[in-house]
Image (tube, rainbow, N blue to C red; front, side):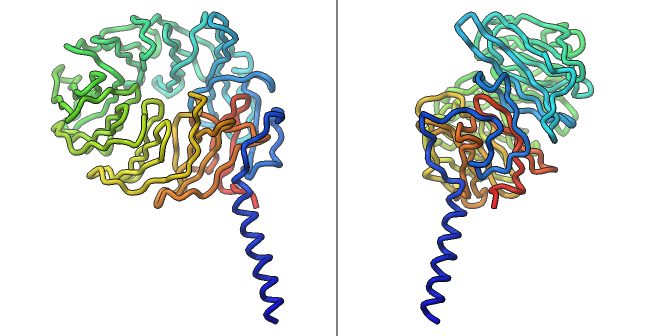
Length: 406
C-alpha cells in the first residue's frame, strides 16, 4: 500500500509541475516563424488574433484603447527615415472583425510616426493622434480624418492630453487648446516657465485645475477657472521629469513620475507628502495606481509596489525578465481580479506576465502564439476579462478567465 501511495504522489506532483510550468517556456529559437493563428503552443486562451498590417510586416504600436464595442490599435511601420506608414485599426472587441469604416485607413505622415493616441470629442467619438510634427482628428465611426494641425514646436516630447471634449498641448511656455470639432486653436494659458504633460480635475469649488511639472524639480497646480497658480511645490532633490501624465487619486493625492523617483503631493495644498526612489530608470514606463497601491516598473530591475498614503514599500518582485535590446516592450500595465498584467522582454522575445497584486509573486508568464513575444502596453476589459495586447506583427484578445489553459 505504501508503494502505491508513493507512485500516486509522484504522478500528482509531476502533473502539478507540468501544469505550472506550461506557461514558463524558454525563449524561442531563431528558426521560429511567424504564425498569427498558431495558438496551440501557448497557455494563453486566445479568443482572436489578427495581423496588424500583414503577417510578415512588423510595426511599432501604441497602447490599445477600448471604446464601446471596439478596440483601437495604432502604430507605424518604418522602412527608412523618410519612408513610414502610420495605421490605425479598429476591431470588434469580441470577435476581432475589422470595423467596416476602417478597412483601408492608412495615413502617410512624411516620416513622422504616431507617438500618442487619445479619445475625445463630445460623445467620445473622436480619435486624436499625434506625431512629433502633426496633430490629427479622426471620426471613430467613419474612419476619416477631418482636421490636421501643425504642432507649434517640433519638440519630439510633445505630449497632448484631453481636457473635456478637446485636446490640449503644452508647447514650452504656452498651452494650446484645439477644438475637437473644428481644430481651431486658442491659447489656453501662458506660463512663466516650461509646461510638460498636463492632467486636469475639478476641485471642491468646482474649478478646473491643471497639474503639471516644469520638467525638473518643480510641480504646479494652475487654476484655469480663476487664471492663477494655486500652488507650486519644489521637490526635495533635482528630479528630471518624464513625459507621462500626473495621476490624480480621489482628489486627495497627485502622483508625479520622474526619471528615478515617484513623488506624491497633496491635491489641495501642494505639500510634498513623500518621495520614493525607484530601483531603476522609469522614464519609458508609466506607473500604475490601483486600490491604494502604486506599481512601478523600471526599464531594468525589479517591479516594486508602494503604499500611496506614505510611500512605504509593500513588495518587490524579482526574477522578472527585462530586455536589454529593445525600447518597445514598455507601455501600460493593468489589473484584473487581484492580479497585475504587463509585458517585459528577455534577450530574444517579450513575455506577458501575471503577478499577484498582493504579494508580487509570479503566477505565470508566456511568450504568446508561436513564441514570437507580446510587446508594449495592454488593456483589460473589466466586464469580460478580455485582455488586448500585441506582438510586433499581430494584435490579439486573450480571455483571462480561461488563462492559463488547462
